[in-house]
Length: 121
Image (tube, rainbow, N blue to C red; front, side, top):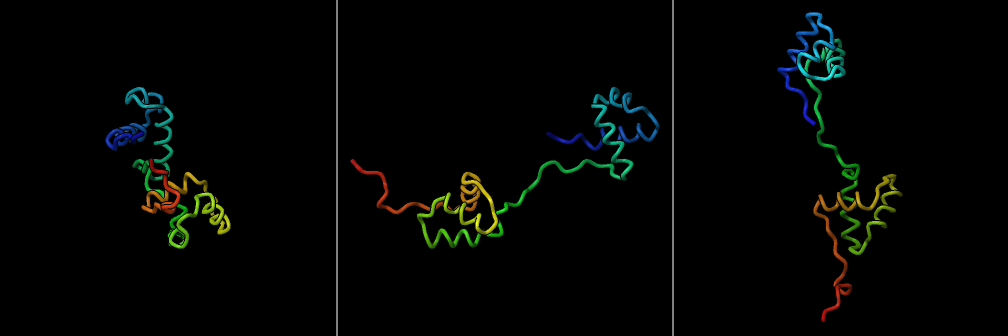
């Protein structure tokens, strides 16, 4: 979803300031009546621009990244479930797939020992 252009927003604001009805404005500019009311409400609050859509969200695991790296370094065969349980002890509730996604994002892949590899023919 993308915000309407500032040009369109300015034209709607000008029509609102001239006293046109929101329903008429919506028909003229082919936008929803609800959006016109939202623009009008924001104008009353002094906001003449759109809000940012989306953005970067910081991981809840970011503060404990060094601790996770240490766990993996100390014990390479630690499972995701065990890591989730350890994190729960530190007050962080997370599911294994979300933990795997974050570890993968950080480039922290840990392999099992070579004795557990697939049997060769």
